Length: 65
Image (cartoon, rainbow, N blue to C red; front, side):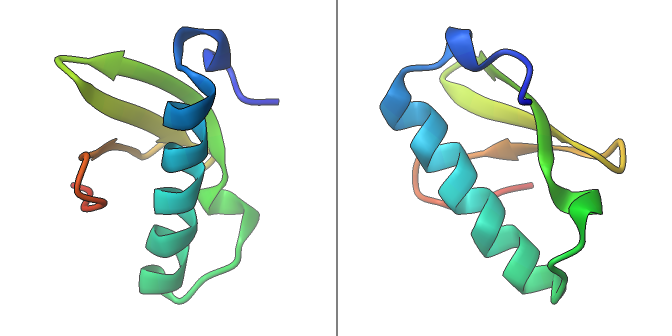
């Protein structure tokens, strides 16, 4: 279950999950460690926390940091 999904629109959530899949491919991993566990939005940027404890900003253009 992903915490905070009620704070995003369905389109924003879909976008976050798509970017997460791209990120997992970039790391070359399909490990559950990179699954999204929490999402929130701050200053029009979607933030995600992963199962391994890392968190990232997902920008509108599909990039992340």
